[in-house]
Length: 204
Image (cartoon, rainbow, N blue to C red):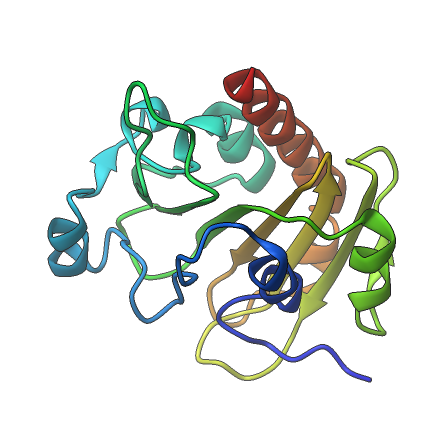
């Protein structure tokens, strides 16, 4: 079967079904982004200029310098949710959206969600057309979407690590060469490894 371009990747839907938290996933229509300050204000997570550590959700786990050097872009705004509350357990679901502030694209969205599903179930749910990523979590994949969405090609990368599912989607501007996006796979695998390590450290 073909993987469809969707707001929330299928692996996240799998995680939601097995997750002990009842929160619904954020989709691209409601996620806080630098281009959607109204929604961001409603959730108490307005876009902030990078340092990503000042943003909520999954944002502090992203290495902004590595993101900029990998993409050749100057990402300056980030917004995420929900934020961790001192004295409480970390939320089961975290998101982050990062933009340059110059235009809607390029942008990077990151989803992190806990799951009771095993790595074997995660692998079974991966659609045809994905390629493996070595050395990232217990199982990882990538795929470049080229569907006509009003943006350019999008690199989707996901991985399973210790009962947590991670998803990244880097969407490029219109007319970007898909081959150039494929060339970013190794760089984004390094970004992903950093996200996993930072998340594990925060979880203790």
